[in-house]
Length: 134
Image 1: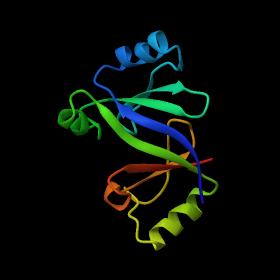
Image 2: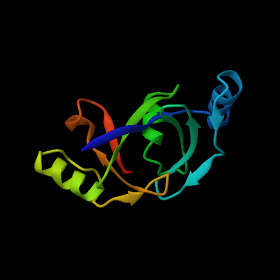
Image 3: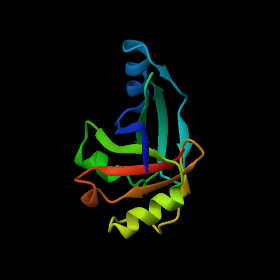
Image 4: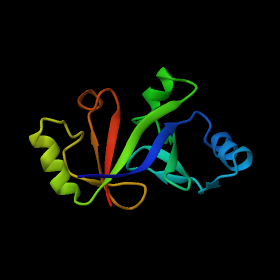
C-alpha cells in the first residue's frame, strides 16, 4: 500500500531565512512561497534528487502549526508524507486496522493539488503521517 516518501515537512519560524539556507547555502531548488489558507500554512518546497522537503510557516492566528512553533520556537520536523495509489482504499484499510484519520476522514486537497489525509501520531509511533494520492 505505502509508496515512496513524498516529503518531510519542517516547521520554521522564519520561512524566508529557511528557504535561503536551502537555496543559498545548500544549493537546492526552492519553490516560491504558497499560502494555503484552507490549511493555515504558507509552504515552500525544496526539491531534492530523491524527495522533497516542505518548509511550513503558520498562516493566520488559527494555524494548526502555530502551537507547534510555540512549543518548539526553533522549529522542527512536523510530519512525513507517503504516497499511496488509492487514498480511499488506503484510508479504509488504515481505519480497519484501528488507525485514526484526523479531521472528518475525507481527503482534502494538499499543497501538490492532490488529495491528502493525516494519521494520528499516537497511532504512528509518535510521528504525524500524511498520505497523499500518487
